[in-house]
Image (cartoon, rainbow, N blue to C red):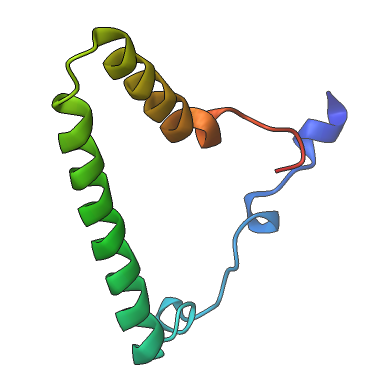
Length: 83
């Protein structure tokens, strides 16, 4: 318990530093454009895939694809030690 009393907040924060210099506003515009295009393509692919799932007549296939998608979306939410 005595070790907890010795912890100071200044150990966890950078005091005396100009916050405007913490993240300098310098961007690689090619990478910004690339990230936008990847996100747009991913959104388009998702909408096409979701439309096809909604059009499935077989409920077993529909729920199977929805379950696989839900698992794929939630996999990174599971805490993994060392990650």
